[in-house]
Each structure stands twice: as C-alpha cells, then as structure tokens.
Amino acid sequence: MVYHPANSAYPLARRGAGFTMWHSWLINMEQDTIRLDNSRRLFDDAGLPFSRIEAIDGRTLDESRVREVYDERAARRRFKYPLVRAEIGCYLSHVEAWRRIAQGGEPGGFVFEDDFAFNGDPAPVMEALSRDDGDWNMVKLFSIKARPRVVDHRPLTQTHRLSTPYAVPNGLVGYALRREAAARLADQSIPFFRPVDEDHKFFWEKGLKVALVQPMPVVMGDDRSATGTVGDHRSAGRRATHASPIHQAITNMAYQLSYRGRLWVHRRAERRERAS
Image (cartoon, rainbow, N blue to C red):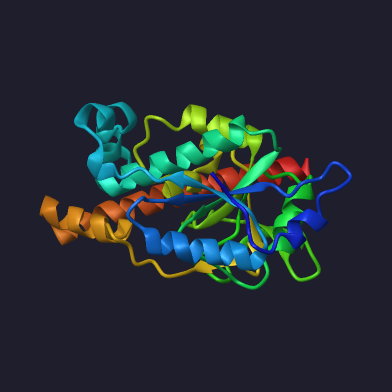
C-alpha cells in the first residue's frame, strides 16, 4: 500500500522530463502503530509518498527458518557475539526492502526504519540523490557521529555535501540505495552472521560504495517500541549467555583491531589506485 501525503505539491512539481524522485519504503512492525503514525506525519509534512514494509519479528521465526538465514557458527568465529532474534528479524526486514527496490521500476529507492525523524526539509536532498550520477551505490542519511572522518566530499545541494566516510557509520535509520546494489545485497546477504548495519561496515565484501550526506537530513526519533528495541533484546541476550565481562571485552577488542586493519588495507589500496 502506498501512503500518499495530504500535501503532494512538492513531489508532483518535480515529476517531469522523465524524472521522478525515488520512492520511500518504511520498515514497520505491525504492533508499532505509534511509530507508523509518527512516520506518516513526517512523510506527510514533507509531502512525500511512501510504502510500508511489514517488519519481520524475529521472535516468531521457527528454528528451521533461523538456521536457513543465520550462520551461528560464523557469528561465534567472526563476530563479537551470537545474534539475538530481534537482530535476525531486523536483517530480514531490510532484505525485503532491498527486494522491493530491486524489483521496482526506479533506479533506486529510500529505506527508513520507523524510529527516524527528519532534520529539516529532506525533499531537496532526496531529489538531488535521485538525480545524482556519482560513484556510489548506497548513501546514508544518518550517522551516529555528527562529524565522522571522511575521505573526500563534494557539494550535493546548496546546503548539503556528499562525503565518503573513512569508516561506514553504524545505523540504517535512513538511506538511499541504487537498484543494482539492492539486487546484489538481496541475493548475497543470506546467510548472514553479523547485524545488518555492522555487515555494511565491511562494504568491500559485497561491492558497496557508501557515501554520507552532511549535515544529516535524518536523525533518531522516538525509539519506543511495543516489542522493545533491538538494543534492549541484545542486552538481554548478552545477559542470558552469562559471558564474562573480561572475555567479552577481549573479544570486542580483537574484533575491532581486525576490522580496523582490514579497513586500513582497503582504503590504502583505494588511495594507490587513485594515484596511479
């Protein structure tokens, strides 16, 4: 179902000469009606239509389905901790969003989690990204760090710039994705062993070229949920494993050192390629 804003003058005014702003997809769990109402109001105020995607509640998945999509052995060897059901459901929800974009008729799409909020008018940024032909296939509209380290940047609009972050920031509250990247992610991401946003920090594994809009057009909104947040479930899951804090700290440190080393190698190779 497509939710059309009461004030659709903005997108209609920019549909012409073969151009249409990419469609927006909202990931929302059935129980989270308050989040849906908040999101509908935000899109309506911005004059942007959107479609709702039924988020997958990982708690309802049977064991056979979990084994099909999640590689627990790889998580224990290559990640910091086993994923909880909420993280598994979150990953599968984004996979469904990628499939919708890949199967759609537009060159790309925008994906939002339902705890987002707009930071100013998002439409000029979203229009610019829909038109942009730069060397990226994913653009994050949100970053936990307000001023992350960047490799390069260029103007996107009169008020925003498009940057390449040195390290891809966590969080998938809002992002743009080109159709070819959506198809590749949907095809190659299962089975998974890391949370979905953590997976994208290893962007070289699936050929992602990730950019970031600055200043952020999307921020965190009200994250209260009828089923609890992913962070709540993750904390409960860690307590249930009775893992030693010292062991967990060592595991986290080793993981971060490994990641930073691999990231450094990749960025160094990129610099050499640009210089040659």
